[in-house]
Image (cartoon, rainbow, N blue to C red; front, side):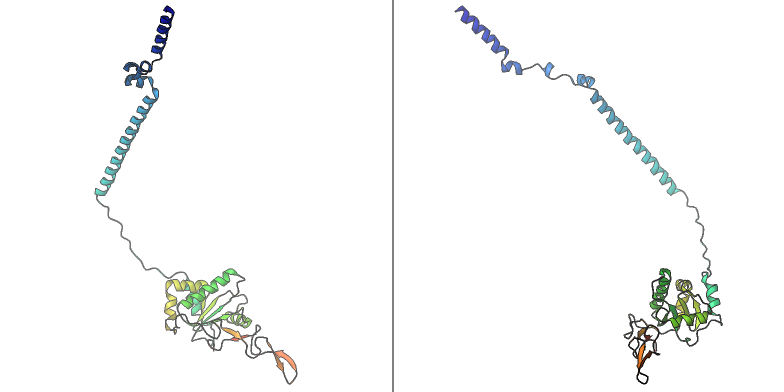
Length: 264
């Protein structure tokens, strides 16, 4: 009996040691240490507080700089305005083309007979030399913008025009394009572009008749050439008397003739 009592006492003491209520209840001093003690013993919290204070200090410094800038600009606005210098507009002379244009346009030695009532442009439609083709195209577009009819003489379509231009200018090597207005020699692409930019070209072309907007020749499509009707562009005709093929005398080396509708 005494042994049973001793075993019960030991078991009761063990159960009290592992009792849930005993282990879960703790003193407030052990579970909730003071906050000051945590802050002092935790260096990361101190660093965080220092960084927050630096952030607010930087904001205050930026605000101060903004106020200084605002005061600076406000003082500049309120300061009396200085009188601005007056700009005097003086009439400028024509661009450097004027002397060359006047000398060529009034030169009695350079004339294209039979063209006193039209504009003649010697050009090329071949794109072998890019700069030459672009100048010819630019001059052609300038005149088309004024809606005036232009006698375009393409030397790539008819070699006779090249010989004609060489004889008129009395030069063997001529550049393209070359423009004649009312039989007078005007100049090349640079001169025509300068006249167009200044406004002198519009004054010279004022007396020429205007074409309808979008007008295109039905016979040649504004190419100024069409196939020869005598040889059909073959450049050869059959002579019945001699029974031989002969060279057609009505077309050029390409079997073309000038358009009968727009170039007659």
